[in-house]
Image (cartoon, rainbow, N blue to C red):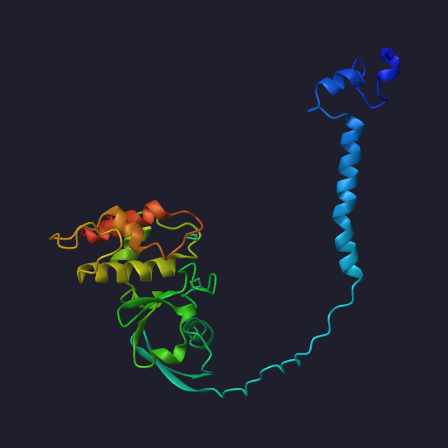
Length: 246
Ligand code: FES
Ligand code: FES
């Protein structure tokens, strides 16, 4: 029979004894727990350290030489932009976005992501809205390209441009050229009877350009300023035959 002081482990909390611990095996002593944890950590590091000291297996596959392409010379490409012909010396790899901004000097079309995610570069090619950053300029010879600079008639803004102003549909304005081109094409697509993924009944006549339809059809154009409600209001107004201005 052991006394209370004989049976208490040094790691046990004051007031507990081995007898008490053995009566509740689910509660290991703190010292035993720390010993187990240290052992596990040591075991876990051994294979890693061992692996680091092993020499890398020699590859029998010969290295593949880098592929080099000879430069493709620039050639004359004629683009019809906003009703005017531009003959530009372009390499085939030049995107339509870079051709517009860097070669034709039309800086209204904006470069946001340059990878088809933001819609800032949206232009209209033969009535179809496209991301100019994802398309090569040489693919658009002979097409009628409309950029934001081509939406107004001289000094007269288009109905959508007036509605954007009236409805305060922008803040910084960086996305606005793409939004305007996209909305312009949207109204044309809707008038032509094109359905979207949220069109409930494609047979409904007349079709309804609801706010959901506008949001869905404008979903490729991001606005970091969050002007979405006002953009939808502007598009809705123009579709209804007004612009919202005086
Ligand atoms: S710049 Fe073309 S989609 Fe963003
Ligand atoms: S108005 Fe600033 S990103 Fe749209």
